[in-house]
Image (cartoon, rainbow, N blue to C red):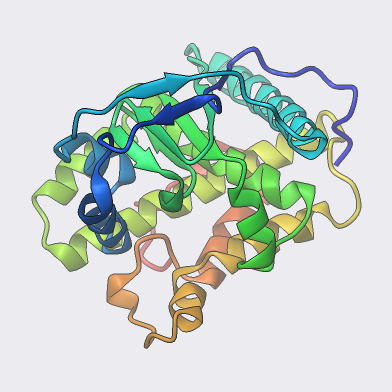
Length: 282
């Protein structure tokens, strides 16, 4: 990606110097509950928000980042700024105002508007406070565990979480949450898949505008993004875990579906083409 020398966002909140005492957080049992709930289709923000919290001591201090972390922080800031430009222009063209989200960097654990979370839950968006959260250590996991290296793969992760912010602004998140509350587990999972695939499509819209308008992409970048979308498909993750592939338990979509919707957003570049709730076949 041609990101060096470009404007960064002012909406980065760095909490990597925050540490939680042993009495704090959700504990091992709570963490297992969160991981299982997310696996079976619950929104991380909703799960964390409704989980009883344990009081704890918060320690704040300066965080000494490595040169590699400093570069990654700068990269994330540039990507976030570019998503702000893309969605700001799209919302303005529709006569609406785009409210820019905050992106919180944390290390190990974080207190969000949806509750306490540990890094094991991965990057997430909290609709309660309108912030996206990421532990930079996830990117090493994306490379080593999921086999999805490259800067554009990293950008895709950010763009996907910002896609959830767009869904919140458009009212999609609220409607899906209400529908899932009335549904059984299989139906709730199916709704979650459609919501996640739409966020993938929105990430593709950002990539479309970043490429066409600002020439941010280089040769091979799109393939990195498509590979990342494929790498975190539910079917692939279940096979990696040694489980039988069970489509009824999918919460984010199969690899082919994630690739298809990210590619659709990239090819078309318009929000109306990302209505995953209106199509029969995903």
